Amino acid sequence: MTSPSPFPNPDRRSHMSLVGQIGQDIEERIRNGVLRRGERLPSIRRMARQCGVSTITVANTYLRLASAGLLESRGTRGYFVTGPAPETPLLQRSIDSMWLLQHAYEDEAPVIKAGCGWLPSDMLFTSAAQRALTGLSAQKLAGMLEYGNPYGHAGLRHNIRQMLARRDIGCEESSIILTHGASQALELAVRCLSTRGDVIVVEDPGYCNLYPALQALGLQIASIPRLRDGPCTEQLERVVRRYQPRLFITTSILHNPTGTCSTAQNMRDVLRITQQNNVTVIEDDIFLDLAPNGQQTLSQLGSLKTVIHIGSFSKTIGPGLRVGYVACDQDTAQRILRQKMASNLTTASLNEEIVHKIVSSGLYHPRLAHLRESLTRAQAQVCTRLERVGMQLYFHPAGGMFAWARFREDMDVRALAEHARSCDIMLAPGHLFRPDEQPSQWFRFNVAHADNPRVFVFLENARLKYKK
Image (cartoon, rainbow, N blue to C red; front, side):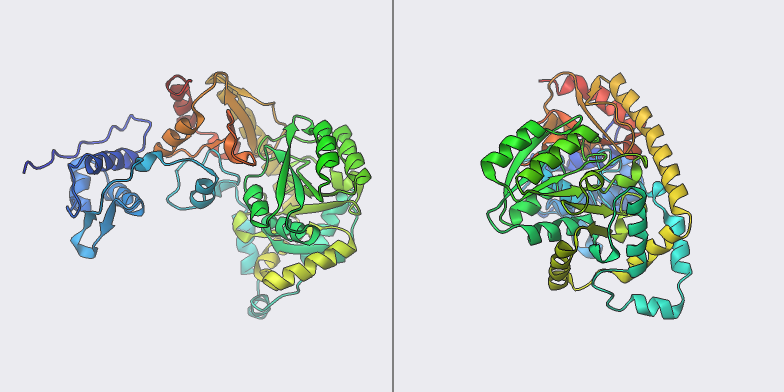
């Protein structure tokens, strides 16, 4: 049998990463029968010498192929082909919402997370978190490691009440419940205010994790378009009259994924429609602290008697702390508290103590001002570059971390996103943000991650290749 040809050196000028190029070559050899089941691949060191790359690059390539079921590690004996190859290539697996949920957070995820929903590591408030931990005495730390108050950290709830008051959202501390991120706050509120089979109104496009969460609870989804000035109130009125929903979930400030903010008139119309039809509004405003202080919200205009407000510190301090909260009227707060205790008992006191220390330190508000300025600067740069490579913006956002853009011509969006993945660029195509993943020509860009020349070189070259 003729020995297979040596593995070539990857092209360092290519838009595809070194790992992607080597992995694609190995995968094609397996698929074409050049490398057969049970055959041993060159050792990591030998392959690195053959391809002219580092051993880390080869190790990452083998690990990626092993995770796809094409190779297996047999300890010191090395990596062996397990084949046969899957019907679809490893680097062209479908980009869907489950892929985003499963892979966007992994260490082995694409290097440039241009479509993700959180800050890059160099923009997290790590210095303040470190100071907060260093300042904990052994006795205090021991207390934080015990079960905490079911409501959550008392000092942090006091901080939140003050922060909401500065935005003219009045509430008592007993109406604020801390949660394991905003996602838990949303789930608890929905569980308490709906029953299986109820209709829930959502925005299209909207928060991608929300739709599968509602479906898992046995709820029916009715969607309305999200426009530049907020949710489409004409469609909201029609949907409310037709389906008599229990809840409407919306984002007033720096909407995910479009980056839009609802106008005051739009919010007044939303409140009029929902109040007349006994529909509870859940305002998921986790990006509120990235908006200017003068920006109005549904919670401010309608008060917490008619609106449930959900917030988070994930977008301003760090997502790994998983500290969110819900603020609402007293009766609803008690129902949410019982539901929280039934499912999780309490939340992480240590994480809440860290956030409390940061917010109380006097550094948090200057931090927010600096973060807003940095994001605004990145947003302007990214939006300009997107337009230069032939994309059009849904609108020019005025803050936050997102830009919503599409190519001027219709594209094969899924193929483009899959190709980007093979180049170690994570894009977030618009179908991920629609209730049933209906087709969309739009992409969400996180300006803090997408401000990288590789992203725009890729988009410019992809424009002609994936044009329909």
